[in-house]
Picture 1: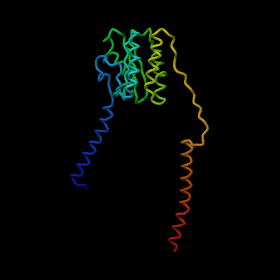
Picture 2: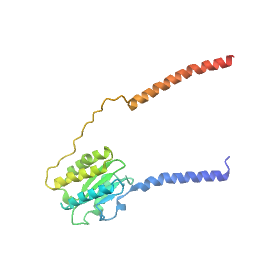
Picture 3: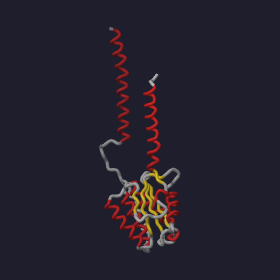
Picture 4: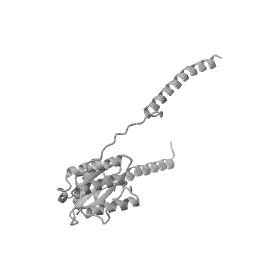
Amino acid sequence: MMPLFPRRFVAALLAISLCLFVCVPAGLAISPSELGASPPEELILDDADVFSRASRNELDSKLKGLEDQRVNARLITLRRLDYGYSLKSFGEELMASWSGKSEIPLLLILIETQNKRAALLADSALQSQLPESLLTSTARTTMTLPLRDGDRYRQSSIDGISRLSTVLAGGEDPGPPEVVERVALPTNIPTKAETEESDATTWIIVLLVLGTIIPMATWWVFSR
């Protein structure tokens, strides 16, 4: 049986490991209440830390352009949502908390990096200018495509803001981006499936050879 001290030491290590496993992911998650009861002065809350300084300055300028169109916009990036929240329900709770704190109607632009999703929510005063169908389309297509094609957070934000800005200025909705179908060029490099098939064949051959040689070698050793 293991001595008392080593057993206590191992138990302590297991307890610490379990705490780290449980607590660290929860610490990365965020709830709407953690962002405050009213909109911050900053137009960009980059909780996920995905924007460079140059990107932040560029996006800040784009968001200030929406202020000229009587829209109080906030761009928020999130690493991971707290348990029980979808991106939309997170935004709805945040909108309920922040809305009405300014004379200008609020627009929330949300990006979640864990699942590469976007959501747009607007104050009811903006419904005639930014209908729900436009917000949904912009989030699911205009913004989500760049997110899932190379983690292009800056491009996703710019494309989404530009589409809404065009509509707010009285222009026609440019619609979602065209999806370009990528055609794979011929190559001599084997695919993953081909490599796995080749590896499986190699293992079968090796096992067959070993299955033949080992019995023969065993018989030869014991027959001497």
